[in-house]
Length: 570
Image (cartoon, rainbow, N blue to C red; front, top):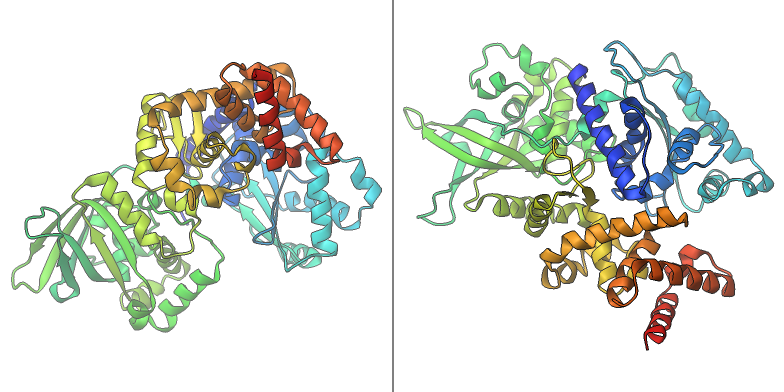
């Protein structure tokens, strides 16, 4: 794992400041804070987005129960009981708890404090041993989460995993002091996960500069491929030593170009250049069984690794090949490449190398891996199709898979011209890190907008799988008007601002209802639709003794509201 430096700290702060700006635009607020305060606030949604896989800022902020955050952002007084954020995934049966600590300055020797873990025991005890009357006085933002957490600890329906993340921007992650962490984890039957700059660096999706490398391979280990005899682009399928894959993807330009290593000590201490994974759709699950199996195969059966592993796929801007004298060796110069499939394998090989200084000589020189190196004819469209299709056979969320689709790249380019950042992935803030955008819209949120505008605002926030699978072509291809996208997005943020100005409690479902119905009934202004929606949803929720959110999610309510608006225009 790469050791962070001051530049990494500065780059992270730039990213956090962008997240503070995104939060302001999405919540229609103004953070009257200095740069340090803005970074501190942006730290919460940035980390939660990358750990929890949710990109919608309005959903992310709902996870955050920290007293200071809610006071600054919402003007609400909340007793957080010693925890800063709560994430509950009922599909995966995972409860994630977070404690955040932001440091305003960089100290390369600073390590996370164990004390931050122990402040969480206050919340854990409150959740496990609290009484129903204690929970009734909690603010709405905490009540539902605490009640669910109480059920998970005391009467779980299913085998839940509970994780406590200790998050900070310090240079070094916490190290176990004696058995303190183990005892704490055992006492509550939870997993404690330290998360500081070394891990955060893996999240930081700065769009990469082109990465080049040179490699010499046995001719018999290489098969060349081209779409036709006249095609200018030539691709290769090769049997590559894991040590060579390690070298050409490391963070040293000199090592990537050095084909004959007389001294491999620098390679033993090298790190993965994470920018080679920018176009890879799959995140890295650091503790997964899958990665342990990869490492196990490398150590126990290095010569069988080629047969047991699915391999790695690279996409390059150009590949220059040259046969060496005797025609027994082939030299490849690979320019501007990305790893679009096999990121799990690549990261594990690097981790395996760093784990023990003997692993390179003892195992990685013996182990070989299948590497496909493609140079598409049609540049970016074909590049992203290769990334999408080579990953489509794996268990990847449909929204992540579609982030590489050519139409999504086109949307990103078009919106960029309209000064709107289109974030296709977690941690992304648009195609130009140095550009100040009017708005930043995540692909998931835009999908919800399109779903609402298709006539189903009530189903827009709980059907991401349908948006990016079953209805994807209808929403993003066949029924999609690129020219209408900028105005749609600007109108969405205008509605958020109107709710803020009117001091009415808003939520994403309300915003999407107003967006759709103010477009459907052009004679009603956004302000009038807001007024009518608030009246109708209040009446409906009282009549059927349900919550506002459940009412808005009801097709019966949506149909009734549409009928009422139609009657008013008659």
